[in-house]
Length: 132
Image 1 (cartoon, rainbow, N blue to C red):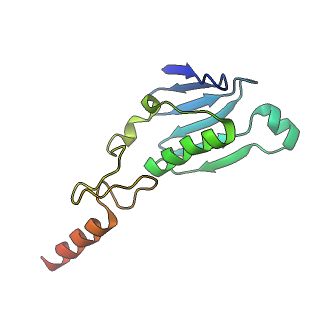
Image 2 (cartoon, rainbow, N blue to C red):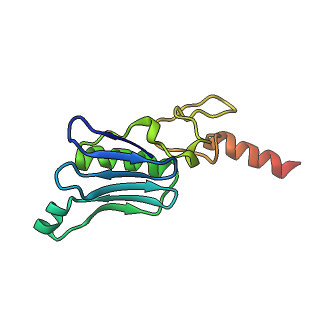
């Protein structure tokens, strides 16, 4: 397992190639986790005791979209930047720049098609497959 401390927050980010954990530098509580099973972003235990609210955002999305959401939610709620090298290995089939292998179209925020094809090429390939 590898881990680093976020220099801005002193939160600890740990990963083992399958799961990423984020522990609060304030009270040691687990404030984030990502794996192929999904996203968990929680308030610190201190904040939970104050507000009675634990979950800030949780989902069963362990895809590249879920990873992008997890990284953004950790920045938004806890000011934590997740290192690129922490990205789980089950996401290795997706390019960081997310460009279509057929036409080269790039997108930056959300995967539009399945695998590495954009929606246009994906639908064109499905259409071509139907005519064969």
